Amino acid sequence: MKKIINSFKIIFIFLIFLNSQNLSATNTWFSKNKTYSEQVKFRGIEYELLEGNWELANKYTWHIMGIQGDGVTLIQVENNSIKALIEIGQISTSGKKQAQVSQIIDRAFISGVTDGCYEKSEYYLTKLWKEGMSSNCLRVRHIDLKKEMYDPDYNKDADGYEEPYSTAGFKHFIKKRKLEIPKVLISHQHFYMSPFHGGRTVIVYIDRNPEFFNVGKTQIGDENNSEYHKSNLNNHPKKKKFVEDIIQKSFAYHANFEEKLKVKDYQKLALGAINNKNTKNKSIVSELEKLNVLFKSGVITKKEFEAAKQKLLK
Image (cartoon, rainbow, N blue to C red; front, side, top):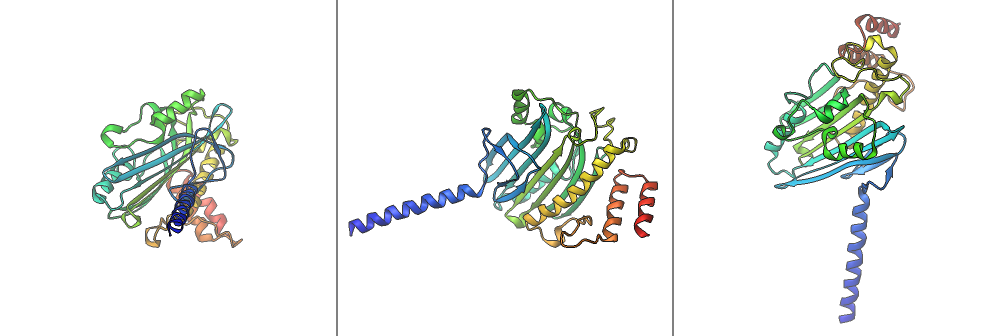
C-alpha cells in the first residue's frame, strides 16, 4: 500500500511539473539575450510583430493592492538607430477597486490634460467609443521622440503613468547600445478597457521610423514644426502617402485587436476601412469612409477629397 501511495505521489508531482511547463509556454519568455520575430504571446494574447527581428528594451511588472501591471517594449534596430518599436501593456484589477482604477486610467489615456483620445494638432486621427467605465480608442500621431524621452508634457509622478519612451529601461537600452535617436516616429496606439473583461486594460503602441520606409530623411523633429505635422504634409507628398498608409494599417490592426480581446460588437470602433480578405471587390462606401477620415484628420485637402470621391463614384 505504501508503495502505491508513493507511486501516486510521483505521478502527481510529475503532472504538476508538466502543467507548470505548459503554463509557462503559453506566454513568451522575454529576455534581453534573445531576439523575437513573427509573433509573441503576452498575458495569453498573441501579437503580430512587424517583419524582422526584435529585441527586448524594457520589461516591467508591478502589484499594488491586488492590481497588477505588466508591459514589454520591443525594438527593431537597424543602422544603429530605431527602425520600429512595439509596446504591449496590460493592467488587471480582478474586480478590485475597479471604479477608482478606471478613473485613473481614463485620466491617463482617454481624457488627460496633455494627451488623450481627442483631437490634437500632433494627432492625425482619433476614434473613441466610451460608455461608463469602458473605453475603446485608436490614436494615430507623430512622436517627437527626444521630447517624449526627456521633456514630456505630462508629469509622470502626478499623473501616475509614463509612456514607454520616458522609462528608465528604454533610455538605458538606447544609451547602452549608443543608438541614434530618431527625430520622429509615426505611431498608432490601441487602447481597450472594460470591467466586463476581468477588469482588464490593454494598451499597444506600434511606432515606425519613417526614414527606413523610402520617404527620405526627416528634416525637423519638433512636433509643432515637423514636416510630419498634418498642416505641413501637403508639402511632402511621399511622407503624406506614408502617413495615409499607416492610417489604413492602423484600422486593420485595430479590428484584429478587437477580435483578439473579444470586444463586444456595440463597443467596437466604426473603422469602415477594413478590406475583407475573402472578397476581391472593395466597397465604394468603405472607400468613401476612408477618404472622409483622411480629410477630417487633415491628411488630404478638400480639393483632393472631392477629386478622389468623384473618381470613386464614376
